[in-house]
Length: 135
Length: 319
Image (cartoon, rainbow over all chains, first blue to last red; front, side, top):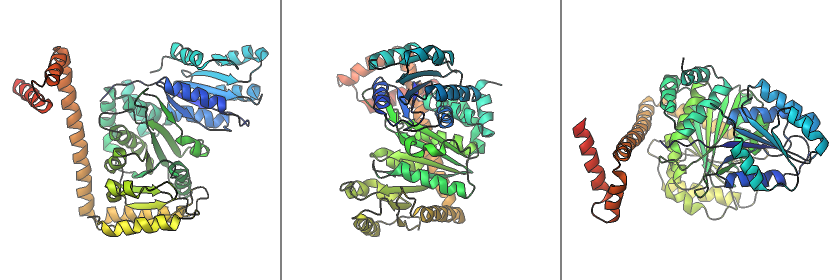
């Protein structure tokens, strides 16, 4: 038996936008950094995302959103994660989230927001440096 | 109660968070994995485990989604383990099987887990097999294990599942060659997916022709079915055949018993291999002799088999 603790990441696309190039680039970069990346595909409800995070026992969730509905969807996702007892999962987000919303999003418990221009290295480093302690 | 015992008890109650944690423990191969399996093992054996394998792009995930729906209509609970390859270069994996099954994710009677092959020493089989046991012990009526069709892992699925469905689709190139090598013998049911495409008939006939040449020892004649996974066409018939095969296994008690023993033997052999190699290697490492022995093999002073035998004899004599 080999003992290998792998970082498991869920990359999720909440809501109705269908632009997943960014999500796929991030998923691929994290995979190439040696992580196991589960991709949900497009148009996920907060319920689907929270339940997937639970079943897949992920350490990290990356939310990608470009529709502008983050103020509606993110609070619901965070609430459901809490309800499922997944408070030890690190959540980051990316896509198009206006500067003035960032503080509000972080107050929900989203650890970091990556906007356009972020390099994949930045995200990889952020994930490895901020990995939650989970038992 | 230890944390592992808490998780094991949670699994037996069907608690989804406990199932998730249990599978992670198994995947990581930590010492708790053994304790976990030991606790749930007496509660396994109730689920029917279906192995589904086939070439990439055949439509496995899409078909599984439809199979699960069909079983849910019959009131059965289902667990799915979807295996995708780990990169041998980076150790990372992209697990995308869920994409086709996400609508099932909020159904409480369904549990889906994506799993990477992680280049396990014993192939993909140990982790998937033990994870299937977890889902079985958690009370799932049906457990489906999906493996990507690439060489050895297809054949290993025999040790995990009771009914094996081998999938094919027209237009994937001449996979008949691949089918010949081993996979023909493991299939209990063949599925030609994308049956609405031209050439689907030819693929079906090719498989049927191949089947006439082989003969399964157990007396079961593997049917060749046609499906269109996207629409669900042919899926009720597939379920019927799976159930038929299950009945076939259950009525012939003598055959069933020998089958169970064969599986038990394979599992025991695997466990012995793992334990022995780990014990011997750990000892070598502790004594700091591993590097020296490896050099001796490189310099052709000894060969791996002789070195292994010498090690084993020494350990047995000491015990």
